Image (cartoon, rainbow, N blue to C red; front, side, top):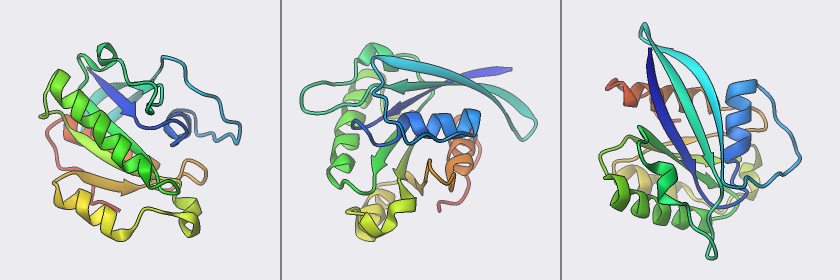
Length: 172
């Protein structure tokens, strides 16, 4: 069995913890609990007959006053950038974090951008053009909702496939 470390990064309150909880435990809670440091969950998955144990590192949010400790991302096999569709500036923060990670561990690591809170689409500040610009940069993007579960399984399956050198699912 392969073990693969996946780091989930993004601004505070974009839904990183909720995405992990939805994926690993099939639950969603309206209660907001700030992640302090890092929380690690595990999930075993199958990619075309190959077993993988995902080690999901839910890393504390980043803002102007705090940044992701690069020691957390050492040895990572993939990065999931989480963006809150209702707060446009979280897209810029996500790519600032990615830039720091690329400096620390290289830019050849599989990466996916999850535009989260799709259940609140009517409140989104992120536009179709924003998403298209990210895709044009060669990064896989998917829309997800921790609340209703849409896109969550596909997102984690895609990053798992990418880590194993397989084609990701078609972007949603």
